[in-house]
Image (cartoon, rainbow, N blue to C red; front, top):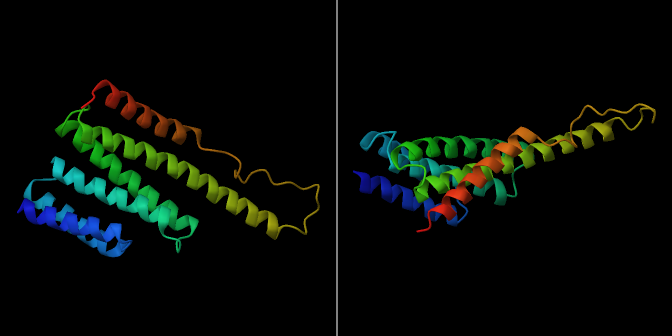
Length: 175
């Protein structure tokens, strides 16, 4: 029953609030599976469960101090996928102007921006490690191929497009 899926979702939310990410993921995943079986994978409730999993991954990437940069990247990449899937469903099911669709678009933009920044941090960390391991190299030899100082401009533009679209839609359709 959809109410059972909703209950799993609510338990997942509680665990997330407590920082119990594995328990939260288990409950959100169960809610997603139930919604998929009961209402289908093209339903707004299924999209809500995807959105919740994306929010969980973003939250864990931000607050879990035990994670390294690679793990944070992986969680943000997962969040982008969840948010993108939720947005696609919500846009068709609810329309582009619906508040939940706007939320998905905003979440996707934020996750894309975080992903760009994390990739930049990972490249900078790698460049630093490379520099430290090559301290014995002559100073005239420079390695500028690391990319630690470059930002993914296409990724940044995609993030900005989603965020601006969400803002413009929300301000054009106040509730």
